[in-house]
Length: 162
Image (cartoon, rainbow, N blue to C red; front, side, top):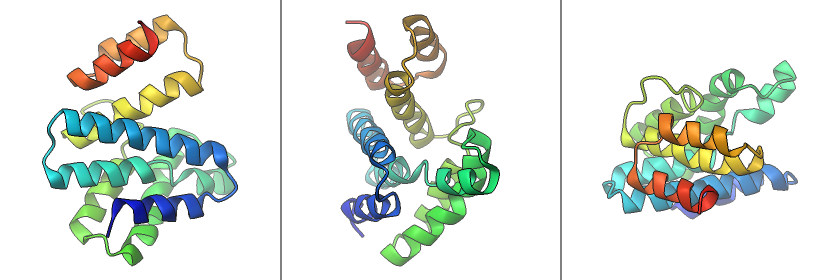
């Protein structure tokens, strides 16, 4: 399995939804950058990159089932979809387990466990701050309360405070 296979499968999964595909690729880019700069081991980096690509896979079913794409519904609907997408790609079961766990928690910001989780949250916020047009005070609050990696803080500052 190659990360590009996951990116291609997720792009096909979201075919016709340029906004979601662009969001996915931006989160992936930031997650990859932060993970590499923070020195993650190869396995954790792989898990992070796969999760960055699949983190919002639950949105479509959430909208269909609940007419909502709330974080809670995404966390509920995402793991089964991720498993169905990743298994045929030959992703190792233990990697799928962690990816699914991260998807099931990626909108839960208390008790962040693991650098893959921390970096995923930071990468998603880096993108959401722009896409949701957050004001500087809100961005600063998120940075100061949520960001723990030097690279994530540096990127947030370069994007929004330079």
